[in-house]
Each structure stands twice: as structure tokens, then as C-alpha cells.
Length: 102
Image (cartoon, rainbow, N blue to C red; front, side, top):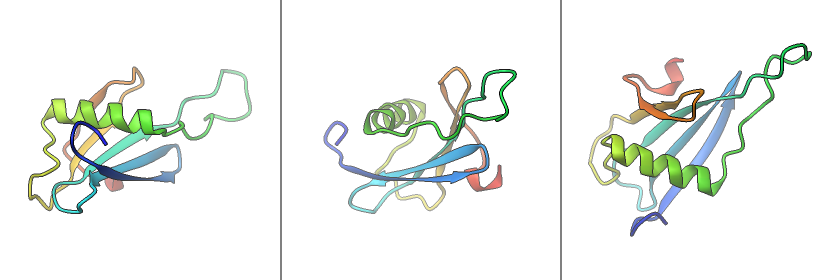
């Protein structure tokens, strides 16, 4: 629960990033889709990426609050997802396309 709204969320992983999808627990309203890039490994290591960034309930809550500040309205009846990405500086920015087109 964030504020007075209950949310459900899921995470899927792709090559080098995770996609967080959040929506109101009642199922109606606009979805939030967020790309979260995996952290780079230290220089000189074999792996280019460290693997998935841990998506915890705290991370989801902070992401939802940031998305609301950017204009996401979870109750809005809109079939088009509100799409964002996390920058390397851990700042949420709005994008114009869904994560599936990355």
C-alpha cells in the first residue's frame, strides 16, 4: 500500500535490464512500466553486468512515488502504459515508448 492505494507488481528480466510493471490492485487504471538497467560490473572482470538489480517492496514504493510526481495517475482509465526508466544516477525519467521496444 502506498498512500491509500494498494498496488500489485511484477518483474521480468531481459538481457541487461529488468522491467517492473505496477498497477492498482483493483486492476483498473493505467499501468506503470519501468526499465531498470542492471549495474555494470567492475572494470577488469569477466562479466559485463553484475546481474539484476534487486527489486524490493521499498524500491517499488519509491518508484511509484516518483512516477506519480512525473504525472502517472494509477486510477486513470488509459490503455496506454505510463513508461519510465531509471537512469544510472537512480533517477526516474519518463519515456515515450513501452519497455518492450528497448
